[in-house]
Length: 146
Image (cartoon, rainbow, N blue to C red; front, side, top):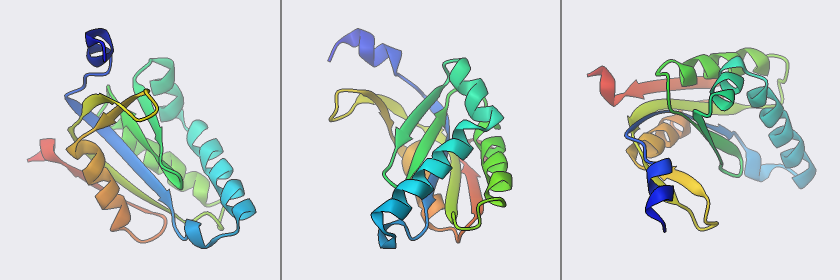
């Protein structure tokens, strides 16, 4: 892997929103696709997503039944994005979602598909917080808040 690619995706502290659809694996394939498409539309429609993407400060990582959004510029961005998503979910009662927010260390990696990606405690903790939540709620924690 070239040094240029490593430098391009090198991060220290990132602000992560991790989401997953509750009960996804129990759904029929058509239902899975429909809910995932709805989630994608909701997320892409948030102001925080659009602002960070336009500024080139957002890494989007699909996770199969959700996504990790890694904001690189504003601590508040994933929380505000989660709030926007939560408000939009009121119009989609069949979409049960868990969300976790965490700020913490991440580093750039090249994944198995040879794409820029991130790894580290910032991602892992956001996923764990998401998995510990009940539906349509969000949990936040920050190593920087100590």
